[in-house]
Image 1: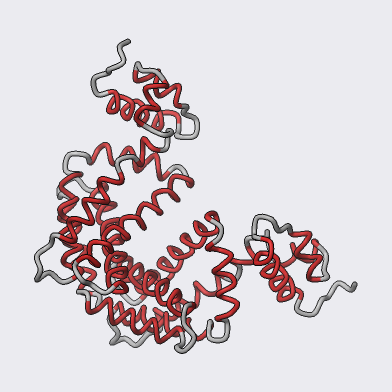
Image 2: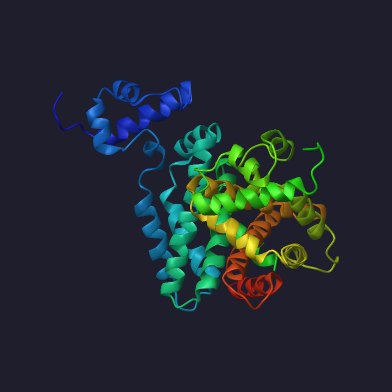
Length: 184
Length: 184
């Protein structure tokens, strides 16, 4: 096999998700993922630090997108509306990934250690949006609280979206933001 | 030594905190905690499941208090105001425990595994307050979002209170609730 593999990363991801789903995350080895993808372990490690990173990779870019989305919202937007705009922008990214996201979520839901990792991701999301708010001149306390409320919105909306077949993620984000505003 | 020890639980807690602070949480054993308290290991395990529970015990009663506090807020209170009332009520519990809370926080901040446990406590707090809101007739989505925003408020206010010497915890909770409302 040549050193260059067309879409090796995508094939490894698909193989990993299939194995995690079939036999469980803990029971799957990197060697098996590589084998299923028709690639070597060495190739696996060119793309992922470990088998967990197949589930949590690509986070940094996504977080940067959240920070930029918040920072770039119209000047007139309130802090929560800036967060809402960023969340809806990010929602587009998930547009055609509902099935893949469901598989991924099922793997995570079956494994407490992965749930902890997922939780810390949620705090990273809040921190990224808080950075965006601070760069808009929002006071740090307000920025943190608004961003954490926004992360809760995203988490809930994502869960509702995975359980649904009709509406897009942005729809659930808008609804959750409206719910939150009505709770004040 | 007799089987009954006056305030054995309090002495064990004090001994544990002293050792965690002096030599680190990981480096401290249950045997050492018992010895420092002048008690037996057997007595330790009568009060705590393990050395981690010295830091996280008593959570259930506190959570029940949050649920009741939310449920018992005036009928006219908005969901967020009901959460705010419960948080301020709970704040009274911490009134004279600022020094102890600082020591505890320093131990947790020094240990990633304990931080994860602390994070999951925050979600348990949100879940407890959401239960209280649902029992007030608040829709589940709104209840969850409001309770999670409330847990973020509590977390931030607690941090500010530990770093301060003048105001009580309720003061920081009121301020954070006001900040959150202003962000909408």
